[in-house]
Length: 114
Length: 110
Image 1: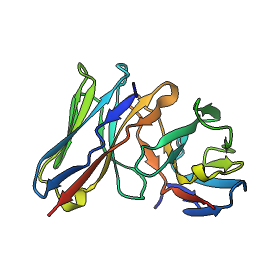
Image 2 (image 1 turned 180 degrees about the vertical axis):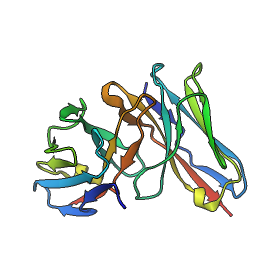
Image 3 (image 1 turned 60 degrees about the vertical axis):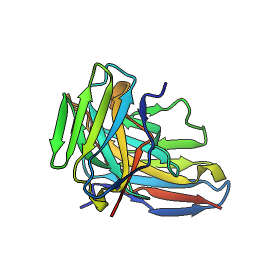
């Protein structure tokens, strides 16, 4: 059974039209991450939550926001998508331990901006 | 300097070959490392974790060299199905946020 679920798998939105991507987890992990991945590039961390504590990367555009209403759910809001925001958006979770932090990924949402 | 650096490749090898990738990291305090495999247009999936000097799982061996700050991934007896991008990952900063290298692309041909 999928443990990190992203919806939708594919999203097409219009230039400038707000869009929300969702992620849910059944692992009860403390940490949830949102990554943006463009073709042939590494996943780029946008932000992450440790429980309710929100951590924004310094270079994440203001156009991107996130919400985590409870442990299981996390949302990525793109307020005014531009053509450059077309990418795969990956949600991941982890539970940091003394030895390290294995992350579990959802299948991703591929966003197209038209 | 990037926190995690990898040779992007591609590494083109025949079936049965042995191939190795390196990944260098800048944070000498890093304690754990991961190799993820990512197929085209799919999510990354954990291949191996490295917490001490190394780890081995079948045809895959990961080694950590703390003095030179790199980890390596060795794949023996390459299969066509090993063709993928291999991502090197290490936690960074507080709350163990995960930083990815750009990935090394491997193409195994008949």
